[in-house]
Image 1 (cartoon, rainbow, N blue to C red):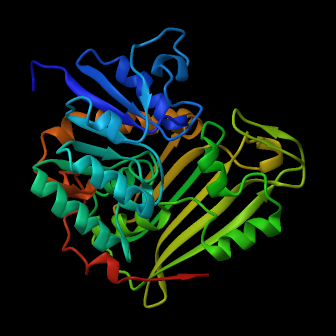
Image 2: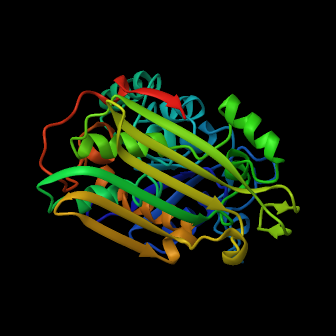
Length: 356
């Protein structure tokens, strides 16, 4: 495939999908051959019009998915519709029925835990039978809170604790992500959603589990806590208007323990249209490994401000890797991601998960 254009179908034309399309169109070695979305306001429209190019591409957004999947041959599908495994699984399996490599940004698939382990095995089995590869990627999970600290462990002799803190502007994300973080809700509605398991960033547990596995940190428990951030002023993004007194963001913590000793601490603060004075935080990412030697790294500015662009970048940049990988389902740690040389801990799906 070195001398031929890579044929790509974009599955999901939401906020992230639009960024992916724009990046794909800038790649001279990519041929965009299909587009899928369930939004009735997008179905049947030209893709160039929907993504705001100011010109048509001669490519119509289709639904149901088989209208695009059966219309043309493709080498890769980039799947950007949902964070959740239950919704992503049948969509990915339908793509695998056509023997097409798949890159997904479904966060629960990044490093499957609990009951998602069995669903990932189904994807692995199906993709091997089809002779293609599947990988779940993103900026978080997928890079900033997991791949970065894993890479930073490379010079370490031993590791005592890993702490990661991310403060990110959620304004670029679309309606689905606003729903996940509880934007626009009352504080009580946010807390009710947390109890129901429908509010909060998806993927932080998976991030912590992957880091623990790569760094050889044996855990017996992961604890998670989610808190609302309430605005005192009106906040606007392209997808939502938030009134004073309503939730404009969240603080989420996942901590990993062994025998009640905290060995991992991951804190994610996400805010819509952040105000440094009111919110009292600075956008950016900070990772620290306490060990021999210790490692401390800070990443500022645009990855925290433009997560939608970064997610698209990760997804598109993975195309040559997934095409050239062995058939099956892959997580980021199954590739040659340099990290501390250590014995692998017990299987992560055995870790108990509780609330603080």
